[in-house]
Amino acid sequence: MAAAKKYDNIKAFVGIGLMTSFAEVIPVLKQSLNKQDSNLIVPDDYPKELQPIFLAPDYNKSTFLIVGEKDDRTPVWMSKKIYSLLPATKELWILKDAEHGGQKGPLRDFGLFHQRVLGFLEVNLK
Image (tube, rainbow, N blue to C red; front, side):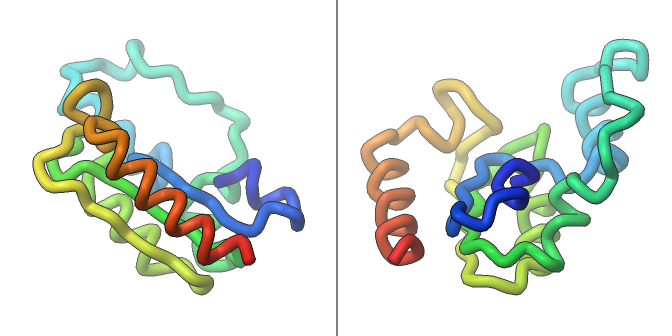
């Protein structure tokens, strides 16, 4: 999302399991992965304004957010929070019973995933 923001020629963005911000995702990761602060590396100098929750209010690109219903790393509430702030064309797809990634993640039915993403891009790249 941050990279796409930099380029005017990028018209649409598809994000899977986005975090809102480091401040919100770190406690979630610590709980879901049973990690300690020392196990999680967050760059001290990563610009706050490039984190999705801070980009969203002025994000002028068509955006398709995809998240698994059972995602315990970047939970549905994070995608909903970002989605609520997006001013441009947007779509949110919450996949029933899907987790964060792997064989149980949003890409588990790649045919359906491919169809939905291509459909979104066909409409929003005109």
